[in-house]
Amino acid sequence: MNHGLIIKVTNRVALYATTALFFWVITFLTITVFDLKIFREHMTGTFYLSILGIFAILGGAIVLNVMSNLSKISEAIAQKESGSASDPRISKAKIYIAVASVPVVISLLFVGNELSALKKKDLLVSAAEAMVSENQKELRTLAAYEFGSAYIEEAAKILSVMRRIDENVPIAQVILPDTIGDKRVFLAFQSYPSDFSKKAAEKVDFIYSSSKEERAYLESVFSKGSMEMRFLASGGNYELYLPVKVEDKLIVLYFSDFQRYGKYGS
Image (cartoon, rainbow, N blue to C red):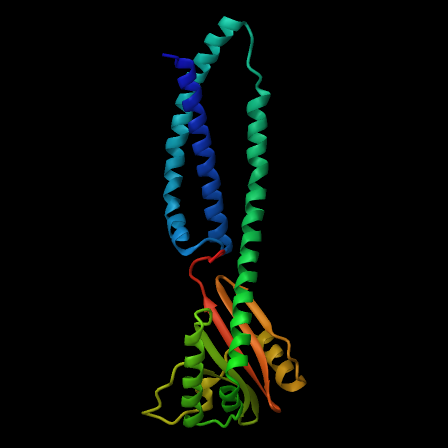
């Protein structure tokens, strides 16, 4: 039995396995900390369980320690037989390569996250434009805005049908400008009906809560006539604002999709 060959093979297997586990944990931590969305759902679920691999690193370290001792014995025997010493620069080069590759792996994860967001944007934009093209009659109904229970229920029915047609648009809303007293607000009507059996519908219940940047964008649409769409991607939440001009009226269709898991390639 060639003990030297066995030691060499097991030593390499342990080294490669521990290196792979190290990068697996680095990838997991990077995705978790920065909330990147890259992998498919089932792969991501498996990936989250890999946190248990941290404990395996300890076992890998012990195995490597044992393998190193066996390697030293093997090297000592080889040196006696050949009279030459091993070149330590080889192992140092491997360490340098491993350390240098960490930022490369992290960079690739960020690139994958950006590609995932771009792909989701393409899907949302394509689905939204198809909805606009195929639902002109319904959009005219949405544009004929007059606050009241009748409009709220009709908008809910229209948006519900629109979002159910395309799986890439799980959430759909229509945003319109209005006033409450002397205050200008934006109201959002969703794709599911509200229950007003106990009280009359009130505008305050439909105020679209948004950031300063979102309000500035909506103001540019309704006050300045901007037709520029707006796409946002954050933490697996993808949002698309699509201005639509129906005859002489403007509305903003809002579509969003929250992905608990990253779906690059889905």
